[in-house]
Length: 334
Ligand SMILES: Cc1ncc(COP(=O)(O)O)c(C=O)c1O
View 1 (cartoon, rainbow, N blue to C red):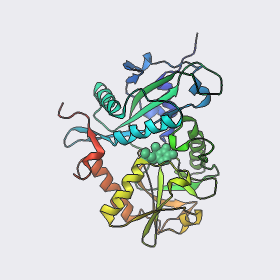
View 2 (cartoon, rainbow, N blue to C red):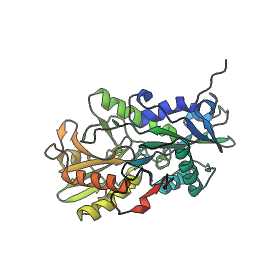
View 3 (spheres, protein in one colour):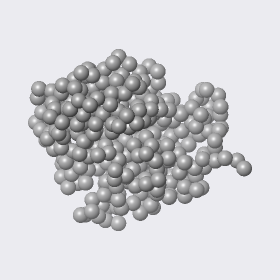
View 4 (tube, rainbow, N blue to C red):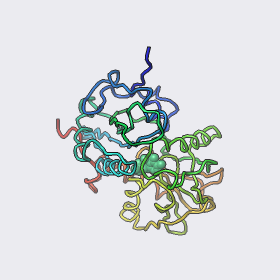
């Protein structure tokens, strides 16, 4: 009997990237979008000879839709920014998305509605080299494009704060593969780093870049505050330029009246800073309590970080009227 992998199987992998131990707790929503059609998970098939399964050739996005119980609305957070980044990621790999970002937003809204999504939901668009091919090259191989949904796990990360290990696994250099492009295979490094951290009793891993400077955590960007100044590693430090990172830079100015400097961050600065946070679609904004068993500041969640986290959540739910351009309503009264 030929072996086929379904998106449910693929989801087990993507859910691990999102930080849960296994996908047992989150049953993916059944209807998926695959190559132009809405089909059930069981109908969506990928060949075990698909190029991406052997070589990790593809790119993905991770997006959040946030439920506002008060107004019974689901809000897609920054879908345009995510799909524009995906188009750039695809281009960096020499691939093309099958739709424009505007079309992809419409398809995502349709998919969420078809699945009756009325709770926090994780959206995973994925473009892979899906053709049967075992040569290590990327030209002339057909692509497959899917969007799948999962309920967002409530226990993804402790929102009260995380304890981090500086990983022995380094963030790859951008001259080894286009790491700004959310390449599927490039997540083996972060997965190893996260596993190392969790097995050593920590919540999350911080990865240094090839030059020994702080890059980011496994699926989130990092900010520190020292002597009244916020600092975050610059894009040249081999980070992924997170969409949440951009929002946090704006909110630090708007909410705190402070400024963010983009520069190299030394490992020691993690130990001597007054406050630190991680931010990303999955973690949103979360305080860093400890790094390598050393307290960050006084070891309690940073007050400013909690203010930023609350502001971002309120904006994401449209409970705060600022930045309506960051969210797109899914149900719109339907
Ligand atoms: C490696 C890495 N860094 C940072 C982030 C945070 O990016 P964003 O805020 O766009 O989710 C992610 C998540 O996509 C990531 O995978």
